[in-house]
Image (tube, rainbow, N blue to C red; front, top):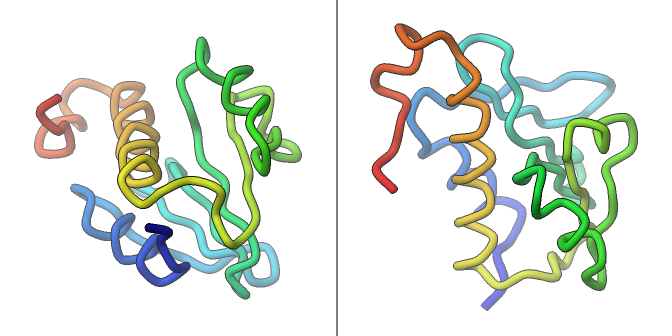
Amino acid sequence: MKMTEEQVASFCLSLPGAREDYKWGGVRVFSIAGNKMFALQNLRGESLAFKVDKELFLGHVDRPGIHPAPYLARAQWIIMNTPYPLGAEELRGLLQRSHQLVVNKLPKRTQVGLLLDD
């Protein structure tokens, strides 16, 4: 089963400390700790970008429908268009992992309440 754009947005906002803003002429930005982005969604729902594990980046972009994210690929971000080429369970797992990758880079005192159990 595939996720819709709104299901993705709702899931992102359900993660600890997540908030959303609109930037850059209509990009929906999901972030934590003020301004630490973990996912981006085009306002019209045409694309979704998020961070992945460094060692898994090349494996992800080898998959059909998944590409290095413009301007963010150097930080191991991938992008995909709708309909998303991943099933709901896998996509939720990757979005949660993106959230945690960003949380893990925060100062320890800021991480409190944002870390999820693996």
